Image (tube, rainbow, N blue to C red):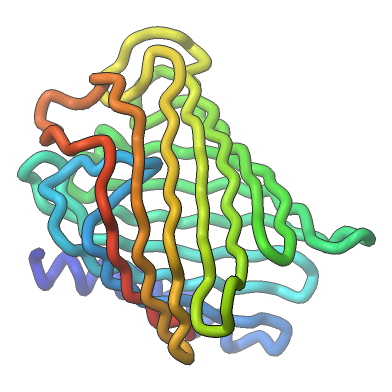
Length: 234
């Protein structure tokens, strides 16, 4: 990883914090993490090496929120970073839980032709959440996609939680584009999270449907693999 690129990614995220601290009705949270590999909706576009990640969230009492995410990643052999900014609005439901809606912009420092935007809506509850995303130009291509996901956790013991995730990426346009399924692609994750104060260790079994739709420079990874992560929340 290039130190200058890492500094830019961190500065881009942390620049959100000073403005938020100037307002008493805002709350700042986030995390730093080290993941055994970079995955996005089940796929790993690079070598499968460990990557650092940073997330910053700013929540307003009126229900709006904004934030940013940065992760080192490779696309084929090209090293770089994924930067994501997002903003939305959330409200609590009378029956418990909350609903939200927002939009995000995703940028790849080594492949700006794949930058794209998407909007989303979802529901969150005490032990899980669901979201649906829509992008009019997924990964920068003229193709419309919808991604639906469900995530959940269950506290089996005070020392560890079961975690689960399932998602499906659907190509609304139906045409062929590199890295995008002609119809749909499923991904899933099942694992254990171990909280240690502000730290969390997570080990999971990952699965992604191998439909053969990848970029020419994507390395071929097995559809099933183990992942390990260490996260510090603040």
